Image 1: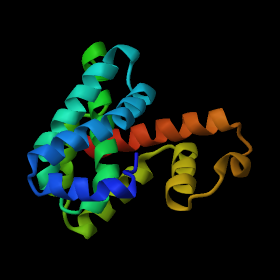
Image 2: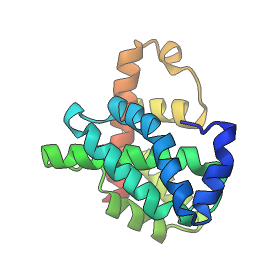
Image 3: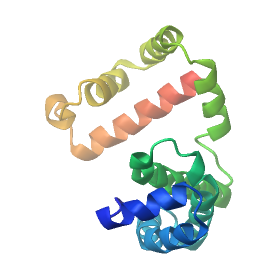
Length: 170
């Protein structure tokens, strides 16, 4: 969802508060936001996710510290909106965003964060800990190393991350 180089002045103007530039930026970003939402949202939530994401873009763009981080920031906005709408649809919240944000705020020093992450990893069953360490810390192609199918590896990695998150947010 990277903006074309010719749109960088438009982004900078919108970031600076230019309302016309903001309107144009919203028009330029809309197709990319829609495409991303179609891949990550329930089909019934796509239009709502696009609308809410563009609204958040318009409201919060000025708070973005570095304009070069725009694309990644906007993708996260759409992703969070898709998750939020999905949770509403199923009345289920596997990622309590408020709880996660509070946890991150209280762990601002590296020592306490490392200690708690270490404890979370130690709490995992060995087969989950192994797949998580191989993928997220060593960044290896782990399916071959563990002699698992790609699907089994993804499933195990997902469950390991879920368990670690539960431990950290408990």
